[in-house]
Image (cartoon, rainbow, N blue to C red; front, side, top):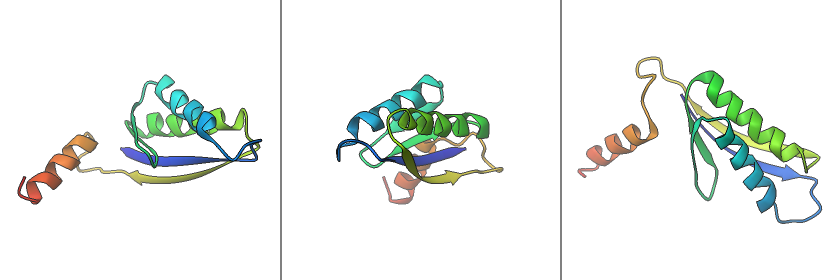
Length: 99
């Protein structure tokens, strides 16, 4: 399973939320789930339980310093290829594009 998500802290003292997002990313990594972060969000790869634990950890970390957290998530759950990784998907895309 793959889960891409972003968190938006609401109710912080500052319009900058970098510190809260950094805590969320650290919390995801602390769960041990495979994760990579880009400018728009974080992709986690693992079992259903691992991915939801990562999402929960991110939310809990944000709620330590914010009154509310808004989460946008996209899940990719496959039964035919449960071990497919993000790297596998990118390689397939590159092949399809002639690369």
